[in-house]
Structure formats: C-alpha cells, structure tokens
Image (cartoon, rainbow, N blue to C red; front, side):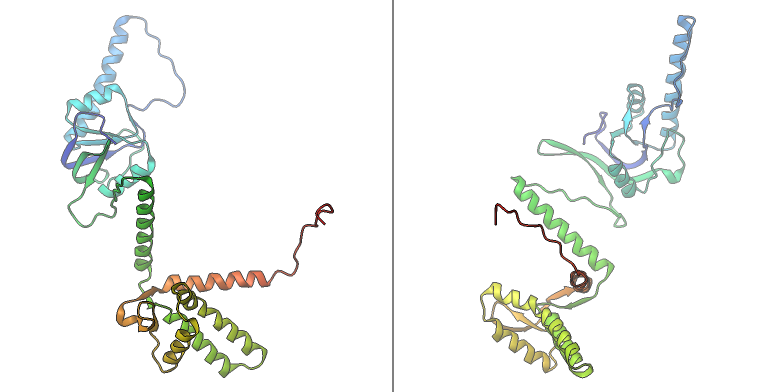
Length: 308
C-alpha cells in the first residue's frame, strides 16, 4: 500500500519497525488528570509534544529514515514529516515479519531508543503503481536476501488463479528439491523396475500364498505406466511387455515414449521423478490399504420399508 507521508522514495534506507502505534506508551489502567488552570493544560500539551519530538529527533540522529508501524497519531506524523522520514502504516503482522526478514530488522514492541542491531537496512524503498493499486517495494541489491515477492498481473481472475497455482506448484517443487535432491528415472521406468525386482524377490524367498501376495503387490506398480498408455490411446500390453523385456536385460532406466510409441531411456532424455514424492506416495498408499484391511466390521444403514 501507499505511504502515509509525502516521501515516496528512499535510497540506502535505515528501517525501524514497531509492532504497535507510534506514540508514547500509555498506562494499562484508566487514569484521569485534573487541571486547575489553563496554563497547566498548555504546559501538559507542550511537554507531550517535546517528548514525541525528542524521540523522533533521537531516531533521526541514529540514521533512521524509514519508520514502519501499525498506526500513527497526527502529532507523530507531523514530527516524522518534519525530519524527512518515510512513513509506512502496516497493520498485518505477517507483512511486518516479511519486511523484518527482508531488511534484517527486529520488530520492536514499544517506542524506545533502538540499538544498531534492531535497525534494518534496505537498498531502495519506493512506491509504484500497478494499474489502480499502489504498492511499496523493498529492493535489495545483494543476493543474500532470504525472501522475494512475485507480482502477477492478468486480464481476468481465471488467468490469475492459473498463475497462482503454477507459482505454488513451482515453489513446492523447488522446496522439495532443496530438502532432498535425489531423483529417479521417470516415464514409468521406476515403477516397472520395482515390479520386476519385487517379483524376483518373491520367487527367490517365498512360495505358495506369500509369493502370490508379493506378486500382486508388485503388479500394483504397473498402474502408473498403464494409466499413461491408456490416456494416450496406445496398445497397453504391447508397450508393457516391451518394457519388462528391456528391464530384464538390465536397462533399468527404460520408460515410455508417448510421442514415438516406443520405449525411451529416461536418464538420457532428462526425464526424472522426485525421490521424496515417490517414496511418500508409495508409503501413504500402503498405509491406506493397511487401514482398510484392518476393518473387521461394517455398519450399514437399514433400508426404509417404503423404498423396499
């Protein structure tokens, strides 16, 4: 949003953030002041003005030229304008945390003299207009900034919703890669290889009913390659049989090529799947199946006599 005062730009800004209203703190309990003459009223107002001006002057002497708070009184706005400070009124605690993280500032809970560590720094602060809306930009020239903002503009709300979903999914992929940068061969290659190895494991270790259970569990991994082929309209069994043959020969990265109706080496073509997504997808599906299998009783509503 726009600034409160006339100052719209500030280079090499020294920032101070207050959580509450920029004013002298009042006592928590209600109190009343009894004036016996007009001179006492004038003295009280002048002392209050001097106190706020002294605080603003002290901030000015420390190099502070931008003040961010959740509210300002008319008197504080007057003295901040007098000493050529940029004024930002932000009531959202979420936005205050974002600004503090961007500028390496510490949010102060009350009006006091700050230390050097509590003052944030920003290379350039400016107010810009995007359409009919004004926003305040905090720009850092160095690459050590831990936060950034993406501004999306479109001609309709549907396009904006699509852009928002795209940004959300892209950032989710980036966060997943940062946390765990392991990848698996995509295009259905991982699923076919898991199916082959589970069947080989069942034939070597077990026999009878247990072997059948493991083989059926292995067949479940073919659901993703089957879905890819069914959606493309190709012959499912022909491509799956070709994949099983190539994997049995040792080509573990062989996947489905939907464009040429054949198999493809996923690693050579750069087709990858995230290991954490694959791991948690398999684990959650197994947990869901085990939960269903533990159900030993199903309660059904009795049919109405009129319907029967």
